[in-house]
Length: 127
Image (cartoon, rainbow, N blue to C red):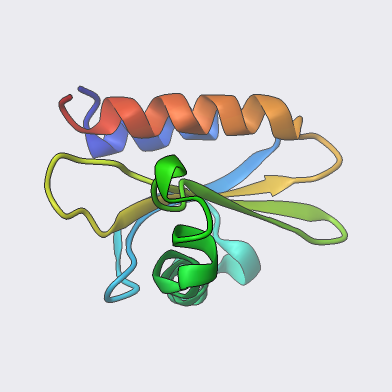
């Protein structure tokens, strides 16, 4: 199990990482941050990401289309100069948190970032 601060520090080591937050998607509040937030505003970015996460997680088109696949695991938003990754943290209890990673598109490798973020999310809570 990795603590929040350790998890965020490891996420900042992902190539191209500009900022990372652990966010509660029901409230939009950050539980921890590292680096910089888009437009230098972790709280604003967390609230916007939480809105997007809530829409995807609660939308039956995504969660019920393939019930055997389970709930939404991650979201990827691409913008001209950046990637925004949302990785839901799976727990044995009803979790409502996700890791939000903001990457510089010119420096990042999307596949590597997704793989590393998945690993970090799995180590954030005990199995």
